[in-house]
Image (cartoon, rainbow over all chains, first blue to last red; front, side, top):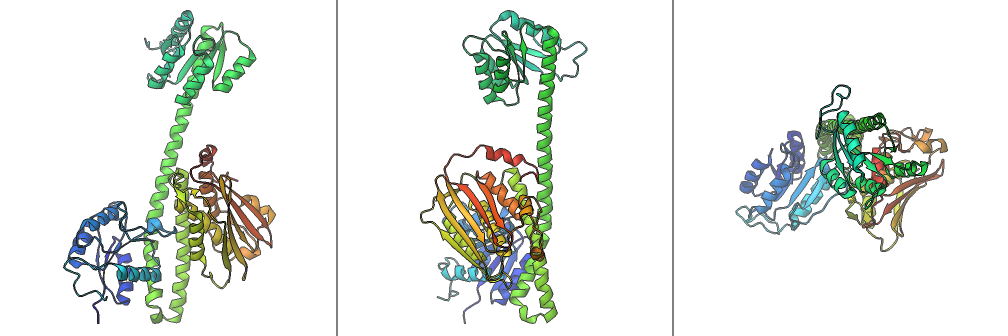
Length: 144
Length: 396
């Protein structure tokens, strides 16, 4: 049996985190979380997640965007799929941005509150299509 | 040189009391200066229009006294040029041949008042004092309007963000509860969670609409310089709304002309218009009804019709549907949820983007919204911006 996928949630709202944690746990993923961008980045480096869920407006207004840029600059995380989940996008069309687009290198933006079915589907798709990780966390976890 | 007034004019603040006098006649310049300095103004005089205008650009004075008949630039030309620099500058025109026509022309060009030669010192003083008061009130009004907008915006942003965060967290719990733990809920619990979710959703929509309106009013919502591919936007939104809401089995279809030009405006604002109109057309429809979104090019514009076969709007209520919080009231609309802000948002976004929205409706037969949006890259419609100043409810 393959190891569970690892999901990292970076969001300063503990209730939002615990809701999503339950969602991903119940679909067989392992979840860890951080309440700010700085801790999130440190954790991302040591944890080596298959997917990162990131909020934009944390303690600092646009903290998420800077965190995202830091993530992309880290060798082990540069290709890790990131879904930005933020209430600033609520009720608006869903944005898709290529990871190569330097200004906002997230794979997907979803509005908050997020539709659980939609999130799991997108998460699955991103984790399947993501290229193999370079870095210590990559070995032996990929299903294909 | 500025001289502090002795007595009567002490209400004029030391700053902002500069009067520029432009007249080719030196005697006239000197006497104006004398009279006005005595009245407490700072006065600078210029023998020709170019120098005077240069000084106005630099000093931004409240008042200008200008002669009509001058060699080189005449008074009208001066008025036209300074109007481009400062719209609030109060201009008083001096004219030697006081005909009604000259006066009317000067006022049309943007002068505040005119003074026929010869005039007495007190006539000049009176007119300048009045003009100065007018300038002061204009500035004061502008300042208050700015402050009011600022306070309103801060309030709306604060309230909405603080209201929104807890609601989002609660809704997220309920969403996950229903998705992942549905089987573990007792029957009553399931029913109540679903109801709570619906009610929370309504509240979130109100907050979102309110926030969007505040942003539109501030001019920070629509991006006119962006371009939107309306065909794919409509297709995407129709896809999102296709699931039958409740039991109503309504078909949504798009009729898109081929090779539509890009529409001027960002996809978020235009998407808000499309999804509001489509969701209205679905909500106010009848079981088995259809919603048709038809998009066609029309010279410099793109026309979008959102047509439904629904319950329609009674004629007497039509004029009010773009009012804030107004909702059509008939027997059939009682149970339809809504904030009464959707159409207000549509109208403001469309106006902001330089377009128009019209409505055709017949009670019992259905409603059609006709939206006209300018093609991207087309020169912006200037009057669109001033419409933002309209107060709520005024925008019919």
